[in-house]
Image 1 (cartoon, rainbow, N blue to C red):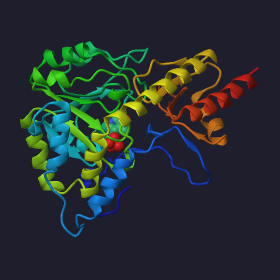
Image 2 (image 1 turned 180 degrees about the vertical axis):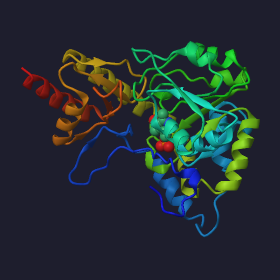
Image 3 (image 1 turned 90 degrees about the vertical axis):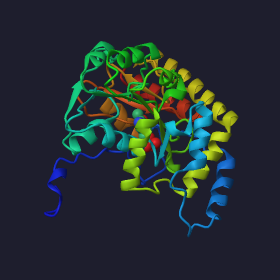
Image 4 (image 1 turned 135 degrees about the vertical axis):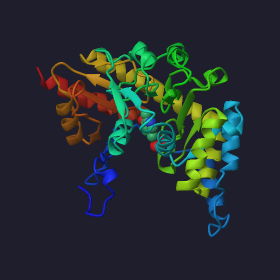
Length: 356
Ligand SMILES: *Cc1c(COP(=O)(O)O)cnc(C)c1O
């Protein structure tokens, strides 16, 4: 409950609950889908240089250099790129701009909790479209929806992804309806829908540096969309927080984006570890959804998600459990280093062995 002064518009606030960061001991953190790898060394040099720019001067409100670099990287014009303080801020501006009383939204029931939290907090009209029993996306239901569509691809926490043809089906079904596509995890094996921007003007794609770019604490995300949509988001940013991206974050982004080989090497290691870990858990009797992310969503018929979460935490491994209908027997486990994953697999092997 808020104070007696709180704007009555916010009486429904329903905060996103980040993964726990307990401080009582050292944990292996497999609960927030961070990268286990640091950003490339060049990022630290860039930070130090940024701090010398002098910091008593304002940062570039237009984020010119990082916007241009992202545009070049994706081969789009800079007018098609919006950068923000993490993908969450980018999502915030996109939802603020494109979802409202006259423009309701829809999203899946099992997905990134930020979307529904946002809709509920600001009492925005929205409809939840359930995933199928096997957690696959009901593409036809989204294609038929009248509301603006908010979807992550790959989805979280399931890790399942759909090919661009299915996303295109949603775009083509109604060109007057916007599709906000969250590609936070696309680098781990999904297929990007960026090329669809050449043919569809109702698509807005959100990306983040927090996962595959090893930069969760640096806070950098961006959107790629037709220029008129980016202009709307920039107009809102100019009202709310014109200097949204610090000098350090802008320089970090530039440096990290330039280290393509490092980026690819980290991705390869995560994907290799994910496949290995998935095989090990499958051998132990788990159902492991085929993941396109840096995490796996797992189920064991005799070891409920809540129990597995609790036991692993006792053993020093944090994972993400959701006490939510349909997925309360499941557990999401982020992919760390190969060593972290073999240790975790070993702990799980012992827990399964205890079942007799
Ligand atoms: C992590 C995540 C985000 C937010 O990323 P930040 O850039 O750290 O704000 C957005 N969408 C999805 C699906 C995510 O998993």
